[in-house]
Length: 512
Image 1 (cartoon, rainbow, N blue to C red):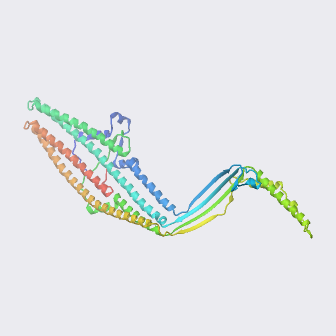
Image 2: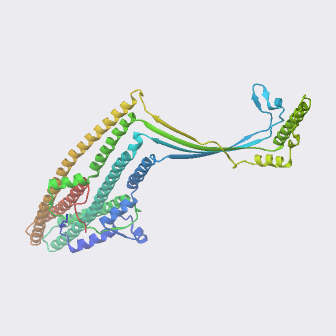
Image 3: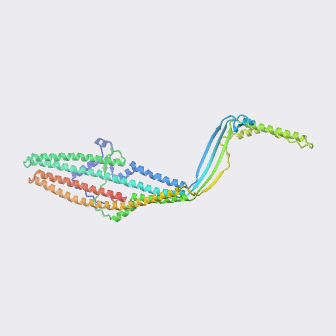
């Protein structure tokens, strides 16, 4: 909504003073201003800085990345999982116990050498159940709720920054008002001094005028401190260094609110982030109920595996000795058999025992076969398994989980309804506050015009010697109060509109 801002009617000097104060806004000292570049900042620019730098908001925004990965992980459960493992082993030299009190030495095998071994395994596993199938839907609903919470954090941040921006302008305009008050007090002092010189005023009138000047100077000092404090608060929310001088460039207009309750309520229902978060939480709770009920359905598990191993002796002496002993044993058996054949009544042909010899090629083959560590794997047979599981009874745990999910769904339904009722009431209340604030601005503008006229007449009558100085002071006091009340009414309108925007969840005004 565009608003025609009716500012307090300030003099040219006051406007010039206000411009000087705005340059000085949120600065601790003049020396610091000289060292730091001045930052001209509109409200939109302030909001953008806050969204980029405010640590509280950034911490909330990080939740969106986590929610995105939750969705990816849910879809990842629909893909088979893979794992690969491997290992290395070592066995020292010495006799090996085979069982009971039997050792390799008892079998005629000498002392064992060192052995090195390695192995690997590659496995694929796939599990499917109702909860796995529903996980992506539940994760996406939870992500929407998280994004709505991030949007709520953004709206809260923008509301806070706008409020602080308004407060900085409020304090700046307050300084301008007090500067006008101080200028009028000094004018009244000069007027009282002139009247005293011609005998139309007493020294008491001059003293009272000096007191008014002193009070205005104290008020101006306090107002400038409030300006600096408001600037510090704004810079804190923007995540900017506190020594940054600010010039606030956005002006806020005051115009009659033309919205209707139903129109704003429809916009709030569509845009309010708290309500959106409650809706998405309800969707996630509905999926949670279905996921809990899926525990009654069967689950499928498939696994496939491949593996291999190596085993290498630290030296080849034992293997060669065993091979030679085996050849010698077979040669002896062959010769004994031939001798037996020759003693038969009808001798059988003798076998060729020359084939049982241990050659250099046999030695090299044993050495080559032992050279396998660590990557010349002997492949084991692949494995595969498929299982289907149907739970029958699990101590009522499944039904308990279903009831918990249903209770959580009911809770989200109640919370959603509660937020809908609260939203309707907040829209009505804040809209009425905005309308009342606008009417108050109109009344205070009329009061200010009356006070201006009364002060003008009081000065003329005092100069003519028709009224005492106290009547002029009273008119001045009424003028100060009228200016202050108008300033309060104007910013009360802006504060009320800012609160209404926070409820609706989107801007209702255009800022220049």
